Length: 213
Ligand code: PRP
Ligand code: URA
Image 1: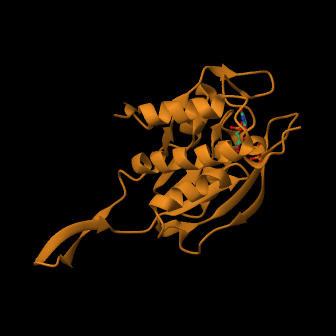
Image 2: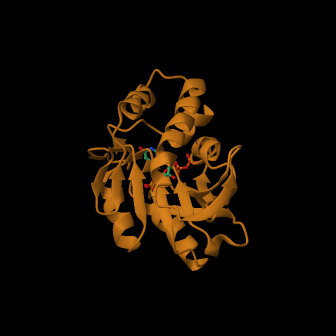
């Protein structure tokens, strides 16, 4: 069962813990890291989509007509580039009818302040539930900027789905946006002096794409 804490859900499950341990292991190579990020994103999507609205539809089984519940509206998935791209396919495995908006955000390595460098959203993003995906919520600067951008586009139903969150990032995001819900596989201890999450898993983008310095 997920651990509920108002607007923050920690997905607690043996499979999630196991796969997260593989990501934390510094010896996990990019090929496996990428695959496990995708699998964790798929597992988390099960939780993130729990409150998507449904509607009644009449379905003909081979035997008779029956009333069923189906999703009422397709969500928009917004990966924060680059690392969020690693989660996208896992989310789309479960929500293949979703549309995708790309948002490029980068943290300055000295100031740790995030800035947007690219945005391309579906035209109707403001009318749909949006799930923002990014493996890491560290200072919360990137996520807060992304959420602000989406609110300005008219988005009302917003969920932020990350793999690892720092307490500092959660606090920043909850303060920056009064309604967003956060789903994470873990809440770690703190940030180090370079604003990396401890114990964390290192630089998610570099590990997904094999660009480690
Ligand atoms: C990482 C990560 C988040 C951000 C989190 O991206 O994927 O987007 O840092 O940090 P914050 O909460 O302090 O803003 P990064 O800026 O390293 O870019 P990348 O995805 O291209 O590696
Ligand atoms: N971005 C990452 O990829 N990892 C961290 O620990 C912090 C920000």
